[in-house]
Image (cartoon, rainbow over all chains, first blue to last red; front, side, top):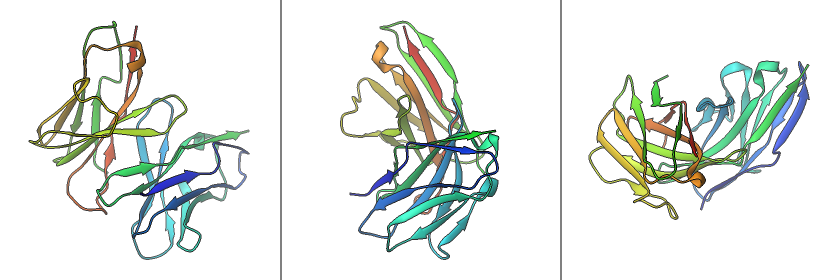
Length: 112
Length: 117
């Protein structure tokens, strides 16, 4: 079965610093990978997705992620964060049945 | 992107009553809708998958008589929490997609905060 592990439950960082949110997946088949952001009391918004092609994926709000098949990772990065990036971030993999399997989430806290 | 509207955003109900949550796709036809439950500081747990015009498929451990799902049209799915109890208090989120296929994106509603008192 496919699964997703987000290695950090909380990531505190200062404004304008770079950040990396880690995500590892397990799958024996081709994968479709996603990163979502959730602001307090809101639904999920898609940041970016990897379906095929280039392993470096660029998304909204200046985020990007790199698909690494050998390390089964899909880490999310941003070179310079803003206060407004404070939110919960979820990595997800889509299984063969089309269902999204979510990681546990990483709380990004950007401090001034 | 496509818009999925969820209503209400917040609801407080008395223990023993039933609550209906609506999920609408505003600018596309949703062949499939998903219902999730999210506990505080936790990830999303898929409760059920519904396809328009057919019975919902529930995940293991989810009581189908407790959480009634109806997907009667291509733009509307409802989740009814029957005989609600305080332990049903949670954040419920729906998502919808307009086609079959692993590379088809699902769009999420804003969520509904249910508090049972």
